Length: 315
Image (cartoon, rainbow, N blue to C red; front, side, top):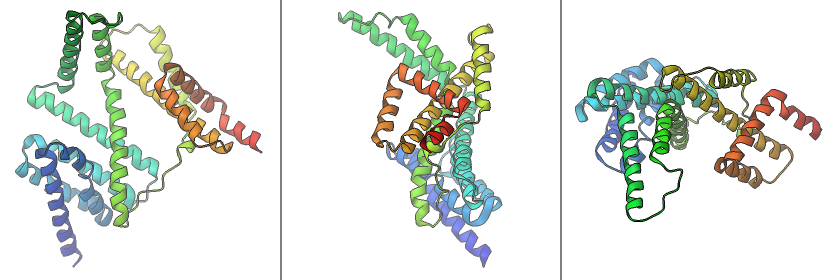
């Protein structure tokens, strides 16, 4: 009886996934919405029937994908199927929200990286490199058109500076991939969480942003990477240079998040209006000096345990 029910529900969920995949592959604009629902069938099945059974559903979904799509659509199912299984496993095993979020984000990162590698190996197309080059050419051409029509172009927007900016963006691609994966995972969890509540499969309780705190060891990683970037000569474009630049970027981003978390923590403990930390966060994100100050605040918070001092002053 249980096997029959499992097979029946698996077939229904597989049919739902097939419809969502068809929308994602063949209907423009709506496909953007459907991508947030693609992991749902795998989440529901994994929560109800466990990790091993969900792998069978995953394999079956690959065959369906090949039939209704093509070989190039398989990475889509690998990505969203894996993501759904990971989320479902975390819910079933009652893992914390932090574990769920990190595991989901890493799954998205690996899935996107897999699609990138496949496009290079099997299609001979470096999508990222070609996108950056096309955008760079378009930007330079736009500047030339402005000049031809007698419009003033800012002095800093020289062709050399534009090339440098796009080279830096290409170098930061791994970091941008990770950041976009974290954002995508957050949005998918947000959308799926609403539906999962109706199936009595709620996501783990969310930790308030003000309670987020990095381990103190992150300071030493940051100091080490910063010293290497300042004093060790690195060849531009080399793997080592790319690794250091991306590590530094990610660590700085983490300390900015830490600083913003402290701002919200301080406001909460001092009973300051909720709008104040929001305004501070917006100001920080929109101005270079704001980002610098918030990053320094995050470093000081970890290094000198500012939260404990706030609690002491409160008592």
